[in-house]
Length: 220
Image (cartoon, rainbow, N blue to C red; front, top):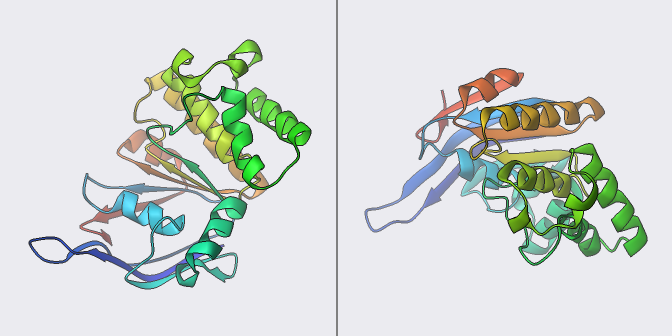
């Protein structure tokens, strides 16, 4: 369960304070496929960062599975992100000198999973997202954009997160590959994983069961 109450995030700028997220409240049940839509600068990515514990709010609360993560220390937030959250970044953020398999294994290494188990799960996840055979041994530069996105999704799933946060997961993909990625994200909710995507793509948003439209940091 994700519960957001009166969430606000402001930043200081030379022209005065800027409120990127403004008094946002909502609740999502486990297994929900949700989208956050809005124009550039509406606060979508800032809201995603607050949900993922990458940033702290100016006020308000974020509660995930009965943990008030908005009140946690930096050290506690590291544990929260490692145990409960999988991130899919628009720019993929894969480690360039590691293979696809090694990229997926990396979060499990931080979680102190032994090597044989890391490799077995990474192989299973890459098979699941459709990156098969010798492509798993390729470095990111030798993979297409769609293939890199599949690796990023597999990596996000590595530590069995209860929440997946995806920032523009189809933004750099052709329409066919984009549909496959959306199908994959939607399928993850069947086991109770909550998936939240930030998107400009109305077609993607229409596939989600819950949509939040942001304008100037507020849900409209």
